[in-house]
Amino acid sequence: MGEAQAGESGVGAPEEVATGTSVTRDSETRQTPGHDIPQVDLHSHLVPAVDDGARDEEMAVAMLRVAAADGTRIIAATPHADGSRPATIPDAVQRLNELAQEAEIPIEVVPGCEYKLTRYLGIFYKQGRLITLNGKPYVLVELPDWNEWPRWVPRSLAALLEDGLWPVFAHPERHPPVQRNPELVLEAVQAGALVQINAGSLLGSNGREAQRVAVLLLRARAAHLIASDSHHPQDRPPCISAALERAAALAGDDYARWMRWAALQVVLGERVEVPQPDPEILRSDESWLDRVRDWLGTP
Ligand SMILES: [Fe+2]
Image (cartoon, rainbow, N blue to C red; front, top):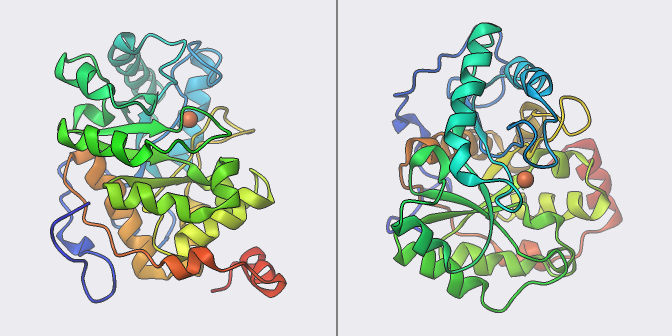
């Protein structure tokens, strides 16, 4: 995506981060790399009773409490567009913020929506009907079909960029076509998308294949963001700090810090320059020893 080249370390400069947010970090935030950067979770199913996420307000508040305890200070509520009514999301987010304040939970909820990728999202955007992440140009998109990587993925992503939208590509590591051929994700990176992997995938809760591919994407610098994709306070919880720690072990402290910074830039609506990915890593078939290293969290 970006015009400028990444720095020598392969990533941009997180020290330039803007922190103009109303959310402050409390003293109990875990000391993960980049802990001075507010922890941002860009993908969650917090809005009550609209999709397969929070069942009711009580469960949504429980999720916010878990997220805050994990160190998250800004969380995007991103219901599935299918089935929910995206136009109602801003009011639902306002209600979630009121509930968080009442419960004295130090977290800010911002709006978002998880859309199936189509080139027509740009039309909705121009009509003012698209719920982007925090009302900025980034939009969360996922593949329309779990079993297919359509040939038109790069064209659709490029069309979104032409319409002024900056796509965040949700959890490709969970899709079987990507698990068979992780290099497909490079099409999204080259088209200008930021790639978001799920915290649970990196930690193994979405199965061995999703974990293997999440690790490969991270090592190849083809994963740029870690989010929870949370649906429940315990079963699919809104936690990302352990995954950020794992990312630091696998890809280095600088890269994990950069990922935190990149997530903050998304909610601030600032353009993120991504490092050049390494296709060789994606081509490599992991050895048994690599898998043990992944499991142990050692580089
Ligand atoms: Fe999701």
